[in-house]
Image: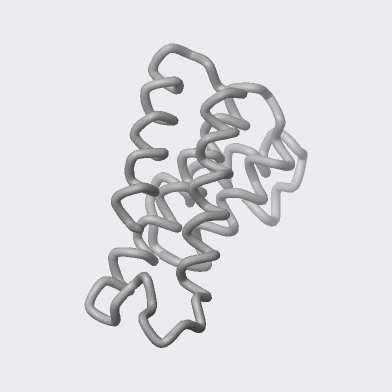
Length: 114
């Protein structure tokens, strides 16, 4: 399950490198939805074993941080700020998310938030 999500993330990263930000966002969003689905799995055989929960949280954070950068590149500052905030819920000290949140906030004129 995690491998499939990592594969989507890798595809999105490749699109990002080609400056295909909208396409990358689609992949990041799909990977994030898939990760939320498997993380909530109430089955007797959960897709994400307890030992991998930290890896899943890190993956959630990375997906949101990367989506935030795509939105910044597209000058979609509110969406960039929202994605950075989602990342920071998983990893409050994520340096790139902190920077992206501040950058988006600055562009939105939200000086106190930045």
